[in-house]
Image 1 (tube, rainbow over the protein chains, first blue to last red):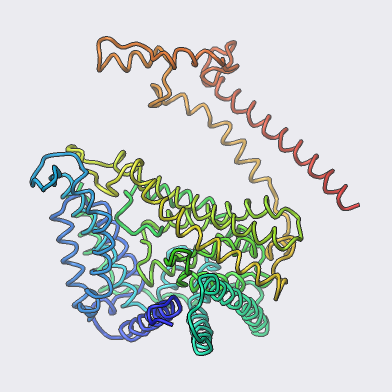
Image 2 (image 1 turned 90 degrees about the horizontal axis):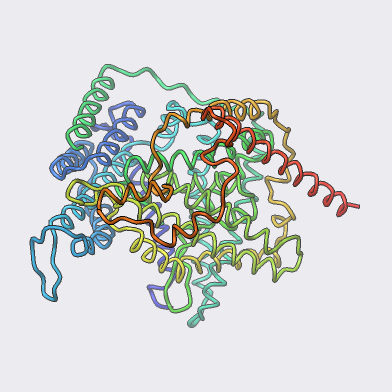
Amino acid sequence: MSSNSFLFSTIRGFNNAVARALVSERLASAPYLLQQFDTRVRLICIFMLILATVFCRRLSLLGMLFAFSIVLAISSHVSIRSLVKRVWLIVFAFTALIALPALFITPGEVILHMPGSTSITYQGLHTALLLILRVETTVTLTTILVLCTPWNQLLRALRSLGIPAELIVIAAMTHRYIFLLIETTNQMFESRISRTVGVLSGSQERAIMSQTAAVLLNKSMDLSYEVYLAMMARGFRGDIRLLREPHLRAWDCIGLILIGFLATFVIWMGR
Amino acid sequence: MHIPDGYLSPSTCVTMYALASTGWYPAVKRTKKLLATRTIPLIAMFAAFSFVVMMFNIPLPGGTTGHAVGVTIAAIVLGPSGAILSISIALFLQALFFGDGGITTFGANCFNMAIVGSLVAFVVYRLIASSSARPSRRVLAAAVAGYIAINVSALFTAIEFGIQPLLFHDALGTPLYAPYGLKIAIPAMMIGHLTVAGFAEAFLSAGMLSFFQRAEGGFLGKKPILATVAVVPASINRLWLALGLLTLLTPLGVLATGTAWGEWKPSELVLQMDADSSAAAVPSGIAKLSGIWTAPFPAYAPSFVKNPAVGYLLSASFVVGILLLSSLLVKSVSGSSSRDSST
């Protein structure tokens, strides 16, 4: 079986996901800039910056927001190397692929003639740059938030922002068991690889994937029943209570006001 | 199909959040009612399962691979409300973990994949499988439901992309968000889904269903798992109140002046065209077809009513009455047929 087969690539994807979660756990508990703020403040600030990015229609202001997100990443000890490798290059490749034809097909003022009667227009270039810069900035901001915030705190912050408690509990449980299911699936694939000799046909490959998915669903359902029994054994009666968030400190309020001001400025000037 | 932040305008994002809420709200309400049962761990596990399944590389004919969403099997096993919640939560975690789909576009992604996908998959599966216990028919139903659900979801995504340059551009005509109109966005999106992603979902759904029928049929009762849990019927008084209130508010429509774009009468169309050309005339097709049907309540007012606000109120009451009568008729017919089948 070749090293780039569907099973290996799926396992690679799983391993990357687990590795990323481990990095996030380590960084989230470190004492750097963003980590110092209350989780609710972090969440609201990043959301305001994302909103400002989506609203902004000026390249110069978008560039400023992107630079700000880099400063935020550096001061929160997020590795720029891993941002480049895992976020910027991937997002750039994906977005540029979509934005590239816009350079040529958007009608407008021609700024560069290309061979074969095609030309790049100012409007096309502006659209492509807007799209790429906007997507890079928003994905960078989301990545910084996730890397600098423990998952349980992020969910608690969402609860204090009015998301129903039922959804928070379901999301927390989902997050907890995703890694168990990834581990289980990895083991199923590895055992399948170790027992497979020769080359599989297309239909056999599809059968392996759908059977693995079916067994995984079966295991998930069994697990959900066990979790339910555990909840009942601990006295779950349908009332959901979450820990109360601590009061905001002066430092949190200052951060919130500054970012609020920056986001409003970008939205106002970038109309 | 996961739309990242920055591709859709803020107003589209808000609209899509509002549309997604129409699916989330009843799903959360239903889950709240079922809290005493094992709904929470069931939906959580299914969301975790959907998250993991979305990472599977499904080998397809032709040597390529594609990713499935898992929405079809979720709709078949959990029913639409459970599927909407579990796929939405899986998408939420995907957006935060992998940046796969944005925060501002989360509403759009959930509407396209979790809500439209679940509803289409559920309806198509039910229509084809019907109450048949034949395994081959149910497998076929799952495959067709998966293929259609993914492609309808992709079509909605393409439409959201395609309307961006029409609605959001600057004074020079530069598109401010997704740059391609419907003519490019729809084929570009649909080719990939009609040829790859749709088949990935179809193979996964059919393969899983086939496996369950051979190995474990517990999930595949005549009803989805969540539908088998008893639900306390809620009072519909609030619904009646809201309906009455909305009917009373219909005269607000009178406040809007002018005619909506594209809804002109032939005479108004000539006036619109006159602004651009001196020799404007009603196109022959419009002139011919516009007289075919004369509405009994033109402009939302019967001819004998002189006050437009009263006309709006009468029209709204008339339509609500017709809809209520129709639903009572359907209920009585379906009630008698279910009694026949149970005896």
